[in-house]
Length: 264
Image (cartoon, rainbow, N blue to C red):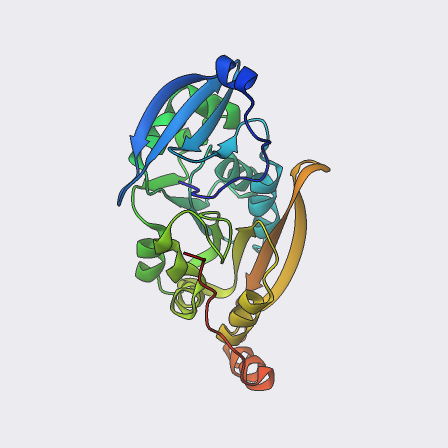
């Protein structure tokens, strides 16, 4: 599940709440609950006691996460891609649209209920991407998959929180700290890319990416085409030449790579 607090959606008014129908609930491993709501032909996922996480109405930045990253995979390669967080399936659908028929896409989804929702009526909004034969779903934390890979992935797409200063799940901190970034570097093939969705810029996080050895680009995106909230996608590329990593790290000099902690 893409456990991030969405800034795409405005505060839910009482009138809108009257139009929304609770479809199902799903427990989050480790605590908490997700709720699937229907409003006319559209769906939204909320976290119990909180606001909207995502909606079928706005998914432009989720599409862009896959499109921008997959465009960097060399053509003709039998690509292997890992997506952290199924969400409503839009990132997966966009990835499949840009990958060849011999590609393989692993989706790591923490919440089993989200997988079930995507196999049901929710899935039609993204075109039922889970039905694609190129897709393998693993109901687990994406960190487990990253740790298990060694130079086997062409791209890792992470959309599991608000970014490195995450808001929704403490366990996501590892992904954005030095150990998690180093594990992602090790999991990627030379020339592979780590793509990360974020609600806000973070210079210290960019510094950590570069210290690990990634070459980093920042791409601004919008929640709905040219409209909606402004988001950010980091594209962190692993050097094709391993020697380039040592050179880049030597030139970067010492930096403060400590992760920021959310306020209690």
